Length: 357
Image (cartoon, rainbow, N blue to C red; front, side, top):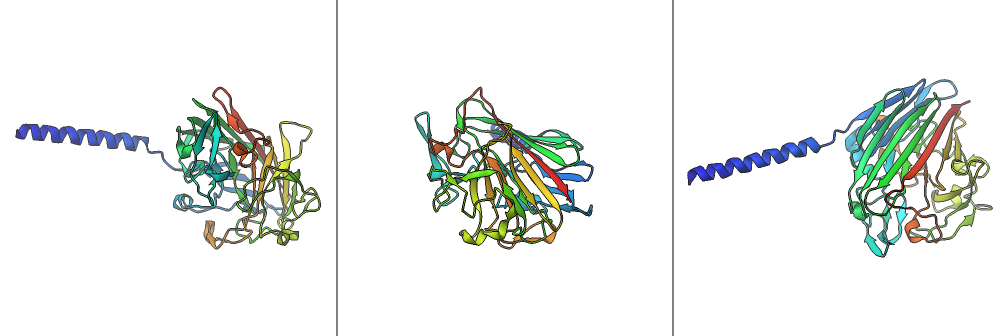
């Protein structure tokens, strides 16, 4: 009898050790990675496929970090404002935290006033991605396999995002997603907050912004689209010509947080989205994308947020320009569909250019 007791004990111990070894083997290592060429540097982490910093020169040649962020991983794990994150499976909001696809209604986490925001409580910005390939002077590619029913979304989805340097003044972002076994909505977005004067230089109200969108998508009190389109003409949302962010912001309820319909350009599949300039530093950001919309957000909700290098980020500390499909498209039949089916591929491209004069 005693021999059997010992045998059972050792079998259970062996199984426990094997399980722990398997668990440790599957733990993904979180790291920081740098891309650099000339004076431009990008620092990233595979936690959330996140941009930690973008360092470029000003008009005097002085280098500065122009993105808001944190010093360490623990701060990113506790982040609630998505600094630099790759958000999904569906960026922006899904009304009433549900949608119907192919006759089935999917219930999602209600993490934003009864709606779903940026993929739910644990979206793509809250998981550890694999590093597929990395070359310091060129590119890095992160990959993530999203399970069926993850945050309520149907089907397995393989996702990759590549950050790629182009020359010494540009970088590109390439987001690719492929459903494995079920149709599913996909709408990824890169959620970097920009302050061209430097991440710790105060507010962005004096930044000049031009957005190549003649219409916005009006929303209700919970920021869910009404399903209509509205011209920006004669409204505080009109940035068709460059003007300072703060010039009409007080005509709004406190901040800009709205999706623009990007005008079609000469290249149907790749459009100029926006230009941002800071006249003090002389830095200018230009953005292109293949997506139909961009969420323009002026971080009106930041309140004494502790950031990098001891910086404290407050209201209007940064600008987010999140190229994407239209919000709540899964519940808006007149919006372009975000449903991707097995055999099809979701493709989202962005190019940023930085100059100073």
